[in-house]
Length: 183
Figure (cartoon, rainbow, N blue to C red):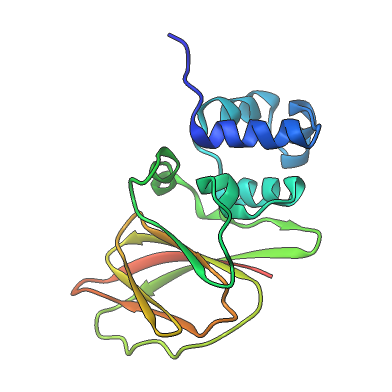
């Protein structure tokens, strides 16, 4: 049976072709075997978030353009709800060490955050860079300026953290999410 190309795999292959980069060069740049990289282009499965960030840097596009097919307008935000596209389904199985990647001009800083229902709402803060939150369990309410986004397990949000923002638990059970700050 022939493997169908996923949307994310097709985006990676298309951007690589447009940049005139070989699969061998990409595998070497990402520090993976050629077979692993070719599988990412074929299926879009099991691509670590760190590799997507690195590819975005190589291709000169925003992270979300590879992930969702649309560039986030980072003067605002971009929300991806669980199940909106095949690319969302693979993240529950990733490893936290795969989230960290350092390369020229940017530092990925992954942080695993636990929020208890009894916690006070987080003070709204601002900082430079780009922020990506991915909810692992429970409900997380992300506040950006005067808007609130209720995110359940499998949902993510990508935004410009120079806007006032904060996160708090949105339910009666502990919530857990990963946040990545790219500076």
